[in-house]
Length: 127
Image 1 (cartoon, rainbow, N blue to C red):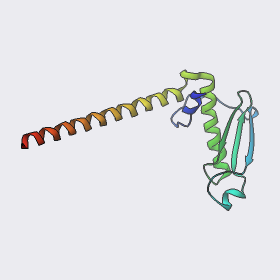
Image 2 (tube, helix red, strand yellow; image 1 turned 120 degrees about the horizontal axis):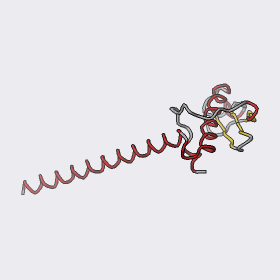
Image 3 (cartoon, helix red, strand yellow; image 1 turned 180 degrees about the horizontal axis):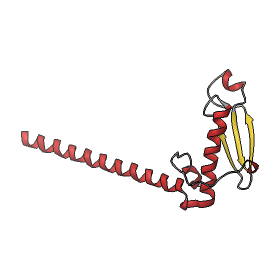
Image 4 (spheres, rainbow, N blue to C red; image 1 turned 45 degrees about the vertical axis):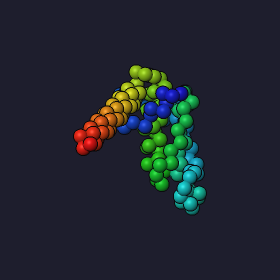
């Protein structure tokens, strides 16, 4: 299940193809903020991949067509992760971005330590 959290990346090109026969689509009312625009329109898309049982709910825009497209992209990435696991491009991309983020944090921490050390040295020089 943690593998499925890596979905949502945009630069993956080598994904498994989905056929419309494998999909079950519903339009439901969305939730969250938005007032009447949300409460009275069925533009939230719930897409289910029948063979794997993976369900995606998308309500990112007010347009049902855009939500259909986004839901299919996300579902395709999740299905790819489900079947390929750690060999999936989506998983590899997520790992690479996490590694880059950790490296950036480490460098920032080192830089902060250097500045702190420099400030201490300057205060000692003044005394």
